[in-house]
Amino acid sequence: MSTANRYQHIKSTKPVVGKARKLKDLMIKSDNRICADCGAPDPKWASANIGVFLCLKCGDVHRALGPDISKVLSVTLDDWSDSDIDSMVEVGGNSHANSIYEAFLPKDHLKPKPDSTMEYMTKIIRAKYETQDFLKP
Image 1: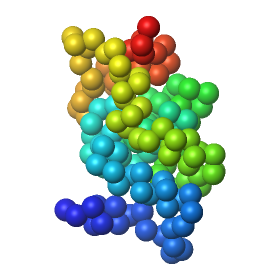
Image 2 (image 1 turned 30 degrees about the horizontal axis):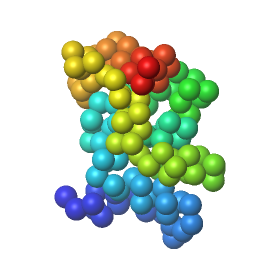
Image 3 (image 1 turned 180 degrees about the vertical axis):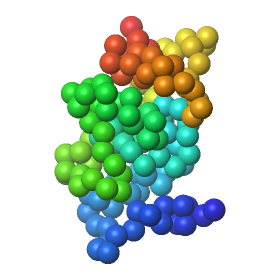
């Protein structure tokens, strides 16, 4: 499936311009076409302040962390503020954010998969963003 067809749901009745165009451009980068936390394809959610794209399941875990840790927005349904878009663009997406938040992820600490249990996803996502266990010491 082509990128244009895959992200057809992003289209709206008005043209995408300015900062909204920057968000759309960021979304179609290859590393942002999968969930930053579990690798599920075609994420529809994002953490604006962390700067990552998320699947629904991981988005639910992020929402439970609270907006002071992870401000979760729909990439298609929510109205994004200029500062939310600026935050996403500044981080640069999943690869860059993961290079920071997973910098010291132990080899025996497996990242969640799309079919991982909610308990495991919650444990790893909390460790990654809330207690920041895998950041450079």
